[in-house]
Amino acid sequence: MESIRLTQFSHGGGCGCKIAPAVLADLLARSPAGIVPSQLLVGADTADDAAVYRLNERQAIVATTDFFTPIVDDPFDFGRIAATNAISDVYAMGATPIMALAVVGMPLDKLPAEVIGRILEGGASVCRDAGIPIAGGHSIDVLEPIYGLVALGVVDPERVRRNDAARAGDRLLLGKPLGVGVLSAALKQGRLDGDGYREMLRHTTRLNTPGPRLAQIDGVHAMTDVTGFGLAGHLLEVCRGSRLAAELDAAALPLIAAAEGFARDGIATGASARNWSGYGGQVELRAGVPAHLRTLLTDPQTSGGLLVTCAADALAAVRAVFADEGFDELAEIGRLVAGAPAIVVG
Image 1 (cartoon, rainbow, N blue to C red):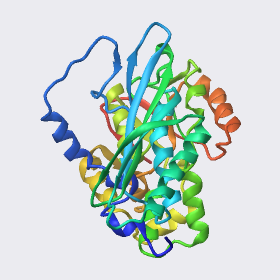
Image 2: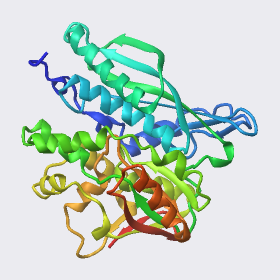
Image 3: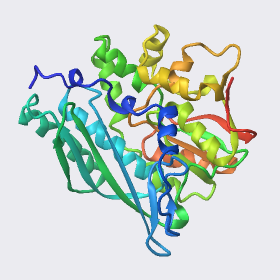
């Protein structure tokens, strides 16, 4: 098992292998319109984290799926990261996870059964931490290792937190620091040391458990989790859906220290450049903003933090929830204002 390097099978790892924003938008625009029943509270129209279907006045089901190719070489860690990332979409809607289904694609002629078993064990360990079973799934024989989950949750329909319900004046808060994608690129280049790897795991395997409690706060208007499109890409989804602009404080952005150092040295994922190509025209970096910050704004965050918009008078309550859940790196990074969807970083 120690001679197997999972990343050698991947052309791109983690959320960095997502289809680029511009390409995805074109593909979706070509898709025919589907059935939209009145019970479907959240569908594909706002690029939200999960679909939400109302069952009755008090209950709605939240459904999402997320899977990707290896971002690390260790099979157990790969399983943990992929499962954490998938369940995060349920938390981002303000819902409580209830069960998961495994999505498994493995090159059976190249990976020993023990390696595949460790990937599944890693995913199962995270589901145990979340208090949910893996109740089934589907597996296929493919050229690259793929693992993830279909994650299901429940929520009160009145407490669903969409990504398109932000309001002018809302403050922006981010639950995890940026830079996971840069660390993954450094890992592939053999430049990430043991401390850096442990730091990467600390963030990518932390479940975004504040989500359901944040949804109980009336002043929390919108939530999403930051993943493959980077902070700028997912914030732009909030801006487009809410018809607002965002102002970010460059100095307030939480950054993984090692990742910032690598970014200064020019290390980045290919997805970062694809992200900028897809939406960079809507992001303005004011004079004085360090050039490497563009890399970190577009950096694909595998299992990234919750991005929360809330009224100013809800800030204390939001901070208290994050603190109680152990998220001591929460940062207030800016605000939403009236204007055409765009981001200004100053």
